[in-house]
Length: 624
Ligand code: ADP
Image 1 (cartoon, rainbow, N blue to C red):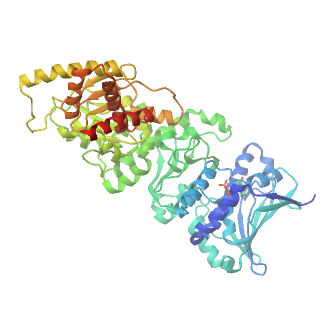
Image 2 (image 1 turned 180 degrees about the vertical axis):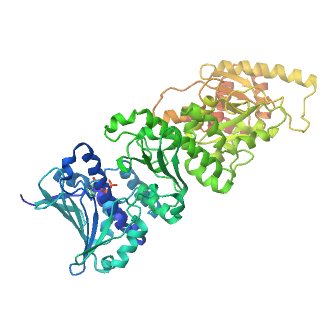
């Protein structure tokens, strides 16, 4: 059959470009990536052979062989794994399958951020070969077929595929090394790289020199070795391999599940936040093995979604190997393993949570995901809430626990107050917090979308209810600040309240069709007005989020709170008494509402009308 030429998917070209430039100082990882692919290919065949032993033929011992050819300047990585048929070859190598990668490349391009840590995260895989090779050849034959295929490319936009004879199943990756990359032909260098990056690979990696083959790696799955025999470097390299990462693990958790069911877990928390943590199809990266045989990386039931940042391996002694992955999902033993993993992880996390600076690395990366557990995992919510940390009005820089918050609540304060929004610094300036600030009441500043949901689900902590400071709330007057408050004399109060009452009536008349209510408020000290959500309504922030995501298209009527002590409000109150029916008063009332919207970060429904009213008033003001 003739040779066919194919273009790379355009994203592959971009990826190649980024990989070659950004990972320049980490070139040697190509070997780790290719060995890891070869080991995956062996694992996949081993799994299929469980139900179809014929696939193995008379070649049942898996191996990966590295062959440097000095004369040709090439390095070959061979495996006797599953191999690829023609379609797989064209589809797997030449396109980008991994979810989120394409979006990630776009992100990198637009931000001009070609930072290694970021790129390392999604595993450059096969394409890393082009960092050291000017031409890459793949010769492969799938275990259940008789034809071999040859793929060749210089990584510059196209590749060719043709049929070739190949005696056995498996894959050769032949790297035709660039002129200045011939160090990868030297045995000591190769031995060192395998030892450093691929020692834990459970399949033997052999180095072939002349006619001799020498085994270079330990070839025992790392997690099966006792903890005391594994050093930090080995754990790190294992993590980088399973996690397709370049960062350090923030937490390494290696243990044997005891009791009714037996399994080993080797789990890691990254120290860098994966770029796709919030993608819809993001899953955990924990591989499931059964008695050392790799089964799947796609086993959602192994861990809850709120632990999707975990990477690593779980190896079970007790799960049956011969059932399909789909049936496995609903296996009750799997649910037990999951329970054990969650319990153990939370225990270890708690131990690390006492050191502020260290824990904040975890929290800043993954706190928003962990908090999903508050909402989704009824059984664990008490444990999780104790692990949560918050920025607050008293502590905008440092993170505090709820225990600390409750410990310093004011006398008479019965609730834990919180406010939600996009950014802590904007929230700090929110008019909603004026009264709280005046009373010295600390408020949690919540800026993750999930924060809109969990406080209502959790309800309370240490017997204190969660109450939103951006909602109509019970008055704060029972809470003392230690300072004397200024009160108007009884007579003065009576006069003022009469005028204010008529203001309220006049405002309700004008604004009634647009908003839910107009109320006086205790909370405002500097601002004349603000908009709040009524007690059981969704917050303004949530409404904005939902509208941005086109989940709703209506607006919820709000409550306008006015500050009876503000001089502007008192003047408007006089105006309401004089000519509350006039069109001037209508303009002023609508301007007040727009001002509240602006303060709350809400869009104005009619900017032209706002500008017209503002112009009239400004002109009049300047004429005085
Ligand atoms: P990843 O390994 O992350 O999926 P790669 O770009 O490294 O991404 O590889 C793409 C795909 O090519 C793999 O998923 C696999 O299907 C196939 N592949 C790569 N190397 C081999 C190999 N040695 N044997 C069989 N298939 C392979």
